[in-house]
Amino acid sequence: MTAQTHPESSLAANDPTRENTWERRALIDLSAIRENVKRISALVAPAKLMAVVKADAYGHGAIPVARAAIHAGASWIGAAHVTEVLALRTAGITSPALAWLHTADTPFGLAIAENIDIAVSGWELAVVAEAARSAAQPARVHLKIDTGLGRNGCTPEDWAALLGQAAAYQEEGLLRVVGVFSHLAVADEPQRPETDEQLGAFRQAVALAEDAGFDLQVRHLANTPAILSRPDTHFDMVRLGLGLYGLSPFADEAHDSLGLRPAMRLEAKVANVKKVPAAHGVSYGMNYRTNAPTYLGLVPLGYADGIPRVAEGGPVLINGITYRSVGRVAMDQFVVDLGPDIDPGQYMGATAVLFGEGGPNVEEWADASGTINYEVVTRISPRVPRTYVEGTWGESGD
Image (cartoon, rainbow, N blue to C red; front, side):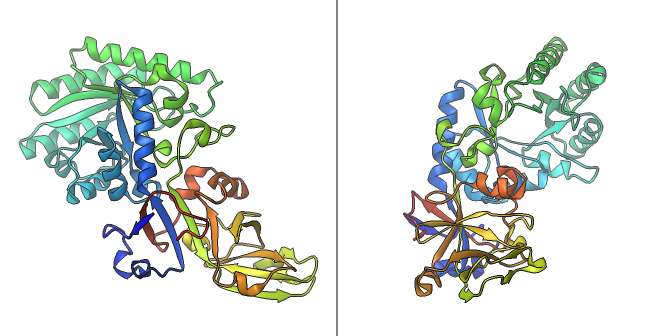
């Protein structure tokens, strides 16, 4: 394994991992990112693959992840906000890119100048056209149809009017409609009929756009669960989000059965070990009390680092044994009950692996927190340095 802290990391300048010392870290295996891209690219071919790197690549680091994904064959980059893609452009990433969530203050002019495709659901169209007029450069637009999710997207009732307005602006040379897309609501539950309904609505919207004279380059609907379970949703391009990071979108199917490899491993050095008597309280509220004399280990990660405060019984691998968190997660730390029969000298400073390769699955922390794996990795805060590695690592993370 090779390890480095990339300069793109917000904490790189102060990151002690550069000197091979560390207290807490998220190891990001870029080889896993590339493997996942290659796996999914082969699955969806000839459809193109968009690597979704919004929210700092689900907490993995947008710039290193985008570069790895492109190197492995991703044709497009996707993000929620124009500003996210602008940061990638500043870093020299020039691949086709789409941003899809806007407000009245979104810098559409900069997006046009930086060749960022812009998603349009309705109100944005006139604003984008005016920005294109000011920039003296046509905008590239993907029209979004709401097929049932109820968030962004033009309703079917307003679709014809949006197509007509877009055609007028295109005729004026202010924009070019290059794509039509939508987003699925329940593709992670393959047995539900709503995906069929959304697929039918999408096909109808695409047909109307083509009948209106638009020469579409990309029609895209599939997210990670649809990529893996619904090949009839692949069209010209798929949007790989969670699967890019090697995680399963299905509650009843593990990542390895899908041919995916998780890219993040979260770990910290045990900060304290001490023996306490029976009935000793642990953390705020003292909701946990020891059943007998035991050793408590302190892990220096808390809700300020992204560990959910509500987590109960989260797994932690230390010295080859999986322990469970006890007591309430605090801002900077939580506690594990190590039992009465350990050698404290072997545990003080030992590596505690919360999740990732060689340790527990991130889904176990999601279950302990009453949430989903998407949230667990995405919420790991910038206080935890990201260290980028190539290849697998052993139990210690070294």
